[in-house]
Image 1: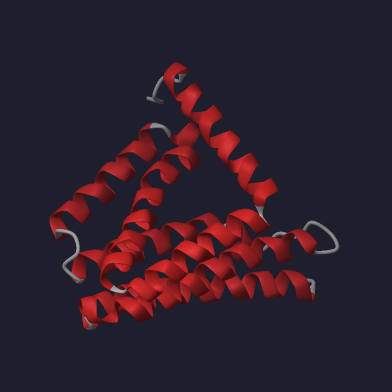
Image 2: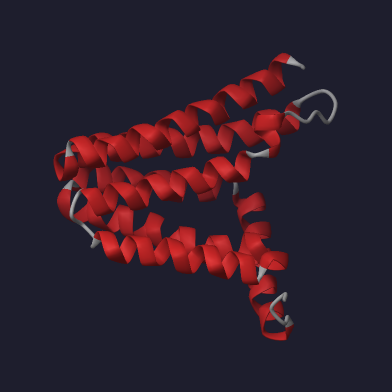
Length: 180
């Protein structure tokens, strides 16, 4: 495996570790850990951006187990935010469980459009996390907002493709029957 691909996998591994740390901080420290959690989220978003960049820079298309499961690591990060929000008292724990259950059942039902469905559930939790931070830890909340805006500008070509694909998937959902 090339050093560039190893670096990409290392960044993905770091994001997975951060997901567990964020969930643990919700359990162990609750709302008082919000500034630290937001800092860790910004680091995780950066590693998410960089791991894909480095994976695409590998001299030849290389696959690794971790690289092939990058989306699973993203789901772990989503769950860690939800766990943090629930343990910290920002959302009701039963509502968090219901959200995960509904998301899981929706992904199963529309598995042909799983990426689209996952985005529909992941993005609101990320937005809620930023909203909570802007309200409760404004310095870190606004850092997160600025990070997101900077990432959109720096990756505008990839971002515009993702947005177009999202809306194309949204339109196709109307004509797609759920899989039995």
